[in-house]
Image (cartoon, rainbow over all chains, first blue to last red):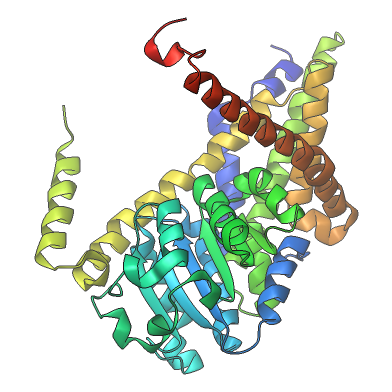
Length: 276
Length: 138
């Protein structure tokens, strides 16, 4: 077997082993490699930044444990910015595991101790609401007809923030982070198309292709795409976290993948040209 | 036939969930979720990175003209998505944005509009009795 043939068929164990090392080095020793923020994340940040204090945000946690590494850090950075801006947040979950993500996120954000926020007045969590687009339509159409209590069973009527909102017009903006394409597009259909509410979206990097057309058309004002978008948001909000560390890992692993792709192609063409 | 661990975990989650009440407000349920399910879920998804890296190395070969177009586009998008490259030279980022804009968004809009029109036509054909595929006829 010639060297070019060997380079075209590097064993899977070698490729994956090197990828593992490329993940491990920046994970153990974050390098703080430079980062260029993208326009989609900047638009998310600026849209939230321009909201007046006291504005009400409807925020959907549309992901579970699988999506947490990509979307969790961005969600934490987004909440930091919203609490810093004195926005009020009505949180709901269209993902079954969203209810389990909420305490994880709040354990990092610490709204009470960091921002003096009060549950029920500055933020409220409705819990998981089943039905995806049906749930969205219900929350935006008549929230109190759909949910009577928050996630701990407290009546919404006894929570000042929840009592204040009942329909789409009561929300100044709708934001979501999700791993589901149906949820990502659903908020555009239900909040923007139906009620003309501004929408901010967060999705996995691999969903960007299908969601970005809504951002390009102006139906979404900002888009946080995966861990890169999360790193941008952490950088812009000044709350460095897991995403910025992951950004170093992305730089290492994707550069390694590029090297492998180039090696495979160079070997392929040399071998095709008769090289030994 | 069934994994003993699978059944044990199933019983554990159901029992803890039922005993401690509301699942997302229960500290016990949160603990087993955070200690067991969350790392496993994240690991399952993250393990894709290894297969995607190996898949890209094996499959992205410029064997012919069409494959070369795919290869060039993929390499440019990977470069634009890798934080270190746009931070070093912003042109990489704008190149990726251009690919995502006129090319990807344009093509995706075409696909979505085509699917939408197709769904409407299928609905009309079904309503007027021209479409009988759902009845098992050809």
